[in-house]
Image (cartoon, rainbow, N blue to C red; front, top):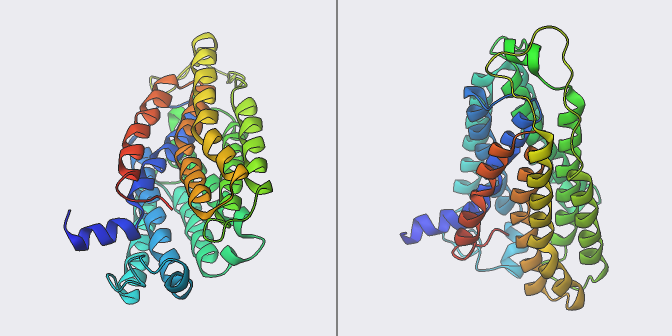
Length: 320
C-alpha cells in the first residue's frame, strides 16, 4: 500500500468497515426474508455513509487532533482538510444515491442516518448527547437493511414481505440492542485520548453482559395469516437457532471483556483505546447473534466470517 493510500485508509478507518455489512444483514434477518438486491444496495449505502462519517470526524477534530493526535492524516499534513471534507460530502451523496435505488423508504431512513452522522461529527460529539447520537446512527443503519429488504422501489412491501415477513417490532428490538452496545462503546471512547475513567469501562462490560443475555433470547416465530410465504420467506428453526445464538452471544461477550477489564484496572489512553477497538469489533458477533436470534443462522455465520478480516486489518490500521 502506497503512502497516500495508507493515509486515506487511516483517515477512513478501513479496519472498521467490516463492522458495517452486518447491520443491514441483521436488519434483513429481522424481516424473516432472505437478503436480496435491495439489501446489497443498503449495505453499499451503509458503507458510504460510514466512511463519510470517518472523514468528517477527522475534519471536524483537526484542531484537537493537532494537539492529542498529531500523527493523524490531517494534522500531519498527509491529507488536506479540504480533501477530507470533499470526500465526506461525496460519500454521503453516494450513500443516499444507493439507498434511493433500493426504495423510497430506504432513502428516507438513509437520509435520517446521514443527518445523524453529520450532526454527531459537527456538534453532538462533544456534548452529553454524543453517545445517544452514535447509538441512533447504528440503530438506523440496521433499520436501513430492514426497510430496503422488505420494500420495493415504489415504497410498497414486497410480495414476500407481505406474506412471510416479521412484525416491525422484531427489527426495532434488534436495532435497540445494537444501539445500546454502540452507546456503551462510544461512552468509553470519550476517554481514549486522556484516559482516567475506571467506572465507564466497567459499566460498558456490564452492558455487554446484559445485552448478550437479551440478544440470546429467541425471537417468537411469526404467525402470518393466509397461505405460506413464497421462496423469499424463511421459517426459523428455533432448536438449531438457539444453540447458534447462544454460542454467538458468548463470542460477543468474549470479544471486549478482557480489554474492558484491563481498561478498568488501568485506565491509561493505550488500554482505553484498545478496549474501544475491541468494542467496535464486538459489533460483528452481536450482529451475528441478532441474525441467529431472528432465525437466520446462515446469515449469522456469514457475518461472523468478517471477524478475522477485521482483526487482521486492525493490526495495520487502527479502528479508532
